[in-house]
Length: 148
Image (cartoon, rainbow, N blue to C red):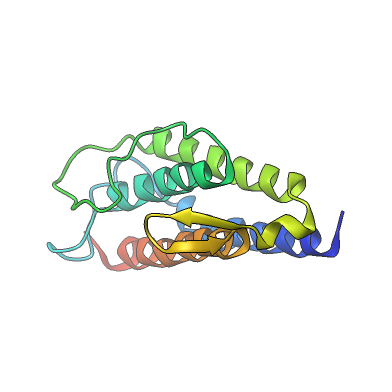
């Protein structure tokens, strides 16, 4: 394993751990909670995390295992199955693990075209996914502690 792969594996493991503190507290009963009436529900955010990881996998050559129901959309109060969202997140983390394991060190600087950020390196998109996960895990933690 290259030093870059080792570092990325460590970053991924830390992201999984950091996010798990919020993710493990989510259940169907609290999935409708919101921090306030203008914010997205726990269920929507949780689903969004799983969808985003899987849909962004497309840019790394992985076929998405889901369709977009949350990216760029507003939470309209739809029902989100927590078990399904949890499965999407697990599949997303497995995809990222495979990406780290199978990407050569020099390939992390390969530029890929995205509709969101324009041309970016694989490393930059990978790091965005981890940041995105942690950002929304923070929202979930706050909603779990202060929402209703």
